Structures are given as C-alpha cells and as structure tokens.
Length: 614
Image (cartoon, rainbow, N blue to C red; front, side):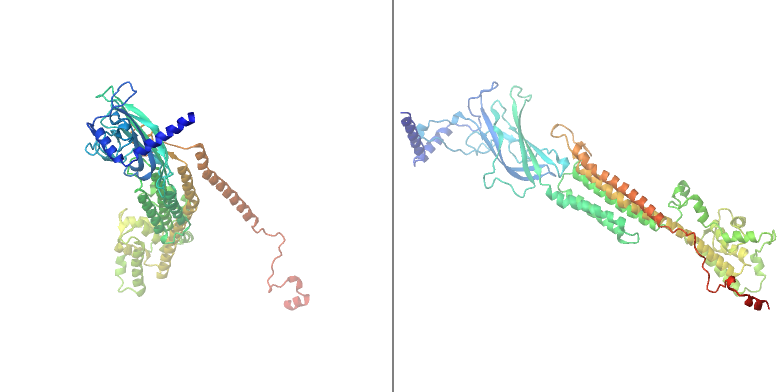
C-alpha cells in the first residue's frame, strides 16, 4: 500500500512538471506576469514574515559572494578588481501565486537591475551597495577601493583588503541583511573559474557583520557586511628580477677594492653601478604608492644605495690618498688644528722635512775657527758696478739665480716666502745657517714680506756672488733632491694609507652588507591599520619585530665574521713563526776565505828568505 502511494505521488509530480513545460507555458507565463505586475511598485520594499523585534515590515536579505579570481590590484592607486558573483535572496509575498491557476507554472523571470534604476527594473531589488567603491555616486557604486593593510612588507606582504557592503537608503527596519551560510563560496570546477599567470591569488576570506546606529534613526540599525580578502603575492618575479640583481650589483660595487688605484675606470665603475641601483629603485616606484610609510622595498633599496655610495666614497678616498703628495691633508692655515693628519710622527717629520742643508752644518763645524768672525763674503750690487763688464760665469750666475726663483715659485704667483728662500739658500751657501739667512732677509725686508724675482736675485747676488758657479749649481740640485725626497716620502706614506683602506674594506664592507641583508630579510614590518582602522598614517619607520628564528638566522653572518677574524689572526701568527724559523743564522765555525793571491807565511822557505835579505 505504501509503495503504491509513493508511485502515485511520483506520477503526479511528473505530470505537474510536464504540464509546466508544455506548449501552453507561454500563455500561462504571460498571464502570470501580468497578474503579478498588476499594481506592483518596484520602489516599495516587499512584504514578508520577519522574526526581528524592531520591525515587521520589509524583508530579510541573505547575501553571498562567489569568488573566482583577482583581476588586478593597483597598490599605487589603492584599487582592487575581483571577478565575483554577488548573490542575494529574499522573500516577497507580493509575487506569490497559485500554480494551479496558471497551468502549474511554478517559476517565472523578471528583469531586475540596480535599485537606483527604477525604470529598468520590474521588481524590488535590495538596496545593498559597496561602500568603498572606486567609482560611482551615492546611488551606483562599482569596483572596490579598499584600505590596504600589510603593504609595508612589500613584496613579501600578504595584502589585506576590506570591502564593506550595506544598505544605502534603507535601514534594517525595511531591509535586514544576513549571510547565506558563511557568506562566500570558492568554486574551481568550472573552466573559467581558475586563475593563471596572476600576480595575486586569494589566500583567505573573512566575513563579519556589525550594526551601526545613526542619530536620524536611533531605533533602526544599519547592518554592514565586511569582507576582508587576504591576497597572496607572487614574489618570485620580484625576487628574481629586482632583489637578486640589486644585491648582485651592490656586491659588484665592492670589486673596486681589488683594483689598483692606477686603474682609471675605477671611479667610473663605481658611479655606473650606483646609477644602476638608482634605476632599479625608480623601477620599483611604479609598483608601490608614494606614501609616508617606509616600505620594506624602500628600506632594501636604501641599504643597497648606501653601500654603493660607501664603495664610491672609498674609491674617492683611496684615489685622494694615492695621489696626495703634501705633508698633511688640511690646508696650511688649518694644519695646526689636527697635527695627527701630518704624515709620520713629529720626530720623523723633523728629521725628514727640508729645513736646511745638512752638508752646511757639517761644513760650518769643520770651518769653525778657520773663518774669521765678522768677515763676510757678501758683495753688494754697488761693488759689482765698479767692474767694467761681467764675465761669462757672472752672466750664467744671474740667469741661474732667476731660474732658482722660478723653481721655488711652485704656485706661479710671482712671489715666494722668505722661509722657502732661506731654506734653499742654506743649501747653496754652506757657510751660513738657515737662521742666519732668515735674519739677513728680515733685515733687508719686513718679517712677512714675500720676495719677488728682483728681490730674490738681489739677495742671491749679495750672498752667493763670490761662490763658484759649479758649487751653486750642485747646491741647487742638492736642494731639489732633498725636496723631492720629502715629497716621495709623503706620497709613499699616503699610498700606504690608500692600500690600507682598500685592504680593510675588502673584508668589512662586504661583511657589513651581508649582515645588513640578514637582518633585513628577517625583519617583519607591519602596520596597525587592520586592528585599528582609525589609526593615523605614520611617517617613516613603522612597527617592526623579529622572530626568534629570524634572530638566529641574522646572527649567522656575524658569527661567521668572528670565525674569519680569529682564523686570520691564527694564520698571521703562524706565518710570523715560519718567517722567524727561515732566518739565516751564522755558523760558529766558518773558515776564513783566503784570496788566491795571498801568500801564507808558513810556506815561505828559508832559502827564499835569505835571498830576499840579500
């Protein structure tokens, strides 16, 4: 009996479905639509059975979003485009009918568009809009303009975008908003549902409901549905085409430490690599917005730019040291402020600097007692005028005196200091010390007077006229050799500093850069926009932290650096020990070497001795 009842029910159901799909469906559907549309106002909310306490009018709307894929995200413009279906279901008792009166037609369709287009829609449509839409007005909103969170960790960020849906002109008193199941669906069983070759993928979706009350309608809540979409970025592109080349270029900039200072392309090589890093930095700017927050990628590019600049500055310092020949780095009028910048120690400078002729000191010590006190070999110009004509040697002396002035005038301004003149004259006139010569010059001129060519030639005539020309020439060559020796000493000193700077930078700058990268790649940057939407935008470096595992990973390179330093010290100590063992020690029992022409006295016979005596 029960089996027959089930069969009868299935037969009636099949008959009912077949009747709905018969040829007469068109006529019955037309009558049904005319019946339902008679007196229907699409602008008035529907009538339904509600269970809320604050209102019995209107209807309950349940919504759900079906996510397909991310079509595009423009972080620099703050825009996101998603491919989704927004599904809404509600109950409208005005559209109820008796299927038996309309040929068993149980379903029909209506033209429905946005709630703002009353002329284009046939039935009432829920007034639920996307609040933070990128385009539109108060009635129509399309697209999404979310407040991004997590962008500070770009490109290793997990971008979170919040979309708020809610009623625009209708409160919950006429339009209640709820979720269908969890409020969202992911389906990938369709041919067009998946995503490929996309920068972003949807990692997770979180849905929450909250109610807001406004002063105009204090008894009617406004429900807002908040969809928080977490996006996962494809970081392989940024790591391969931006991060790795930038790191490689920075390491290549350290190659100048292994180049000789004589290589002319050393400076241009560093400048070129710095420009390449800046070009990479400009390319990254197209992916991120211009904002006050310091992003991870900005910090990364800043670190690379700093180390490239340090390499360039090191090259400039090395070239400056390598070709510097002065006694100190500062100008003469600032040299007394930092005596440690002089080359060598104070005693070394006094011993090596060109002060006066050492041969002159020896000469005066030998001649002491021979030269009569008060006797001077000076000869004034008036005495020279008594001669009828100058000899060929006298003319050569005058020309040579002028040549000496041009040699002392290093800056070519036509003037030389009395200190330089007295030093040079002490090399030519060995009978006078530098102090005596300075007193003579001060007596003829003022203390701070600078000699021109005529003054210098006159002094040379009075002091060196009676000296042989060859002695004057050799004294000038001796002065020039002494001056060049001191210049070479300073150049060698600064060249040593140049090589020292290169040697230290070969280890420390790459090591410091590697340590900085270890810290940078384990540093977690974050913002508080997700937990505190009302938080103000911060400027510069924001909240950051490092996990315990990140701390240990960042300490690997410093630990390796300590090991390298200890290994270097140990190998240096062993090398010194081997050097000491290789030193040649004198043998105690070495026999004297006798020349072939030496005649030993023991081998001389007595007969020969007698012949010699005879």
